[in-house]
Amino acid sequence: MKKISIVSSRFHFHHSLIALAAGLLLAKAEDKPEPTRPTDAEQTKTPSEPQIEKIDATHYRVGKIHFDQKTREIRLPAKVNMSGGLLEFLLVQPHGKVHESLLVTDASATHLNLAFTLLRYLASKELFSLIDETGHPTGEYPVVAADVKAQARIMMNVQWTDKGVTHRVAINDWIQHSEKFTTMPKGPWIYSGSSTYQGKFVPDLTGDIAAIFTSQEAMINYPGSGSDSDLVWFAFEKNIPAKGTDVTLIITPFTKFPEPSSSPYEK
Image (tube, rainbow, N blue to C red; front, side, top):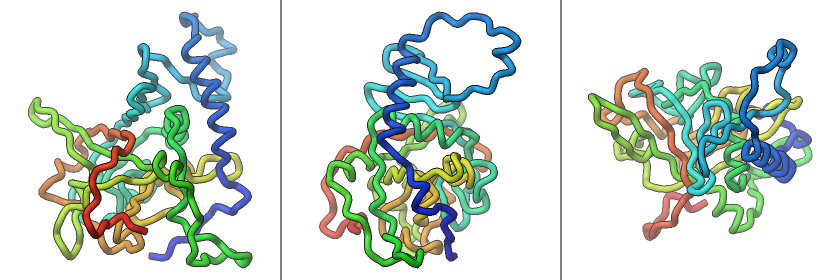
């Protein structure tokens, strides 16, 4: 399926500015006084910035996103959207491409991006071809510093409860290769950061948050073999609970493990 980007180069995400704003927001959350009853005028006022709530010494919440400043773990609620069928996305919002996404969430992508920034993850654009002056892909990819690549790599697990028993597995275990019939190889995903368009964060506009088939509009992308095709990955039916099951998607920093001799994550 051909993808058409709605994002022009002049709307690229400025990570340093967001990081500065995020730091100020976190400082506000840490120094926040005891809440008082808002006036009628305050209740009708539209908030101009995300409200970060401090839960304890290291845990914070912004909207439906929970994160731990010490471990850099991020948690967000989702539901199983597909227990079988062809996948292009891992996670979308209800107005996103739900017909080809494993999970669906009503959490804000902007809030998720804020958590990434507060926890010092760095966005990497290494998966996206450079564009020439005519607006077409060149087939060449940007050179990304090793430290940025390292800080962009994340592991994702999914947790759910069935008959009183809590289960937690790598999200890759819920995804199956269409020809090999094996689970997606163990390995990291990449925090891509996405862009803004007319002042709005693109994943909140499109509803597409995490992509298996590489998407420049998504903020998380799968970097492994088969990410350049929309016909490779399926929902691994025997491993997935019923559609509609409540789950928690858990994002943590990638900790290196020995790579196989022929790595599926080589670019």
